[in-house]
Image 1 (cartoon, rainbow, N blue to C red):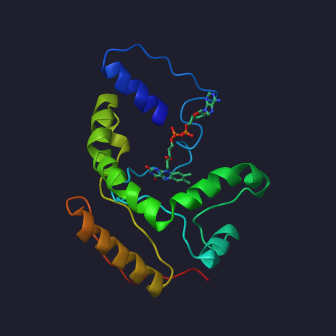
Image 2: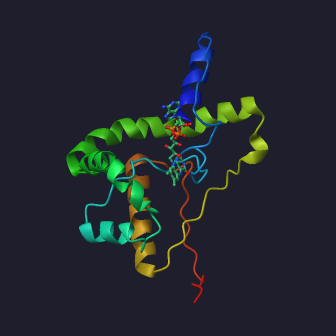
Amino acid sequence: MVGICTALALQERGHDCVVVDRRPPGSETSYGNAGIIQAEAVEPYALPSNPLVMLRMALGWKNAVALHWPSLPRQLPALYSYWRSSAGTPLRKVIPVWHRLILEAVPRHEALIRAAGAGDLIRTRGYWEVHATGAGLATALLDAERRKRQYGRAPRTRLRRRHGCRRRP
Ligand SMILES: Cc1cc2nc3c(=O)[nH]c(=O)nc-3n(C[C@H](O)[C@H](O)[C@H](O)COP(=O)(O)OP(=O)(O)OC[C@H]3O[C@@H](n4cnc5c(N)ncnc54)[C@H](O)[C@@H]3O)c2cc1C
């Protein structure tokens, strides 16, 4: 994503570009993501500060991450850096810059989608977040409403609460 977008931006400015990658296009992180243009992500996803929540994530009790334990030692420096950047002060510094970048996400993607004639691959009706417990849903709604108030994402953000889903036994 980053490499191709940089090459496209340079091409727009009249430069010749060659992208050299060790793998076929879109194979690594950009292959495995959820496929959402994340205009709602007005704050970066921080690592939780609660060690209990982190433990539950690490043990796979939450679906936030799927750890590949053998590669964990190699990932430790990056994880440590992520953990440090997730603390209140560094995070608060990053948020205004991040927020400005995220505001660009939809219009920038729209231009690329139009140029690629890929509009039929895109759905613009938002996405569903499903919570297994009422408490989890209430917390997520409060947070989404806070972000909406704080960052004014109103044009693209609509929150609807729906009931009646059951968990499979
Ligand atoms: C599970 C998951 C879900 C996500 N969901 C979303 C989402 O829904 N929406 C969203 O906006 N973001 C999402 N993200 C984040 C998003 O996918 C990443 O931020 C983005 O794909 C990163 O792009 P990238 O170009 O930096 O990395 P990559 O796509 O990993 O590209 C890096 C490229 O560098 C190449 N490379 C590495 N080393 C070398 C080398 N030595 N020589 C040559 N080439 C090399 C690799 O082969 C690769 O092609 C998600 C991330 C994850 C992990």
